[in-house]
Length: 250
Ligand code: MN
Image (tube, helix red, strand yellow):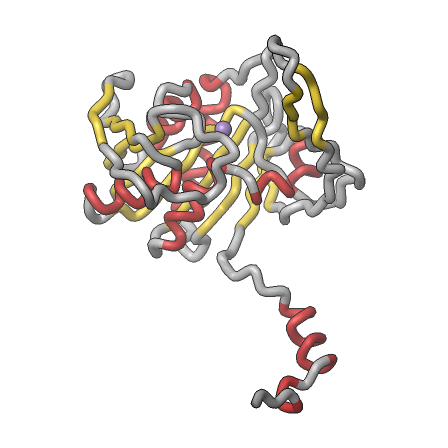
C-alpha cells in the first residue's frame, strides 16, 4: 500500500517525521508537505501561482517539500506518485477538536484525500511550550490507530486526536459542537500601530461522547467524518415549510 504523509506545520515539524516513521511499517511511505507552516490554512488550494516539488532531507525518509498548502501537497503528491491509497496528515502540534475542524490545515490534508476518492486520516496532539509531546511515547498509539483504521476500509475520513501525556485508551467519538466568542483583541505593534489577534474562547460545555470529552479524559479520540454537510433534519423541515412548487418566475 502506498501512503502519502502530509501536515500543516511544515515538512520539518517533528510530528510529521514520527508519523511517517510509523507509517513506513504499514506501506511504502512518501512525505509531501508544505515548506513553511500552514496552520489554520484549512482546505485552501493554490490557484494563482505555480507550485514546485523539491526533494528534502528528513531522517532518511522519502520526503518532498512544496510551496503550497496541505491540500496542494495532497493534490500534487497523489498526482506525481501514482496509486496512493491512504493519506495521513499530522501529527499536528496542537489539538484539532470540535470547531477547530473548520480551520484545521491538518484535517484538510486528510479531507482533500477524500475529495480525490482516497482514504484520509488526520492526527493531532496538544503541544504546550512547557511540555512538548513525546513522540516516542505516542508511536505505539499511532501504530494501534493505524492497525484499527487500515483494517476498516469503509472508514474514508477519520480525525484522530491524542490527549496530553500517556493515553488511557482509544474511543470512538463524534465532533463536539461548541460556539466560540470569536473575540478580536486589539494590541499595539512596536511602531504604535494597532494590530489584532483572533482569540477563541468556547462559550459552552463539553457534551459526552464527543472528541473533546474523550480528549479531556485522557483518551485517544477517533471521529469518523463525511464530506456531505447537509443537515437532513433541516432539509426535511425546509421542504415542509416552504413549497417551492408555488414559486413562479416571469
Ligand atoms: Mn498545525
